[in-house]
Length: 115
Length: 113
Image 1 (cartoon, rainbow over the protein chains, first blue to last red):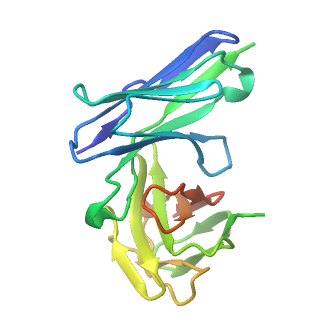
Image 2: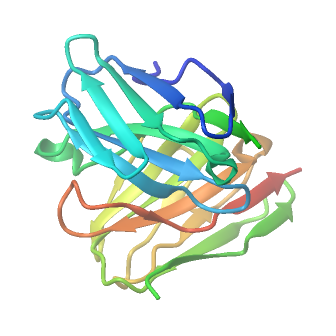
């Protein structure tokens, strides 16, 4: 069973516009959420994270929103740039407990930003 | 430069021929793990290690072995590879806290014929 789901396999946006990537989760124990970006032939790189005690976290052009009641998070990129074209993975973990911060990933969304 | 390295980057092998994918990190991290990435499934954890000589299964450990004899190295061993282990493999490491950033290696593309 997929505990973290990214239901949009791909997203295409125009340069300068907003990109919104969505992620849903089912495990209510998750309390730490992350977004990773992956370029071809490279490993995923950390982009931004959010703890469950917050509902928003910003870092430059990137903002992550968390809606705990809906078990939903989203990544907003404003403005989008062609260099943002990559695969974006949503991930979740339980910060404490015995899972030692294991990351559970979504399927990924391919973002293409057109000039 | 802080990094996680993996070798080889690409490997084509045949069913049943034992292979090892190496992973090394230079950040003195205690926590290391292996993931496989498959289309439509994202990344799934195979094994992880909390420290030297301490390893445990992730979500998809069948057909894999690991060892952690030194802090910096965490090799992934396929004793008898099968075609369903054809995948893209990533090694990762992070610091002591579960919310520390995980750093990923560049990946190993494995094809088992």
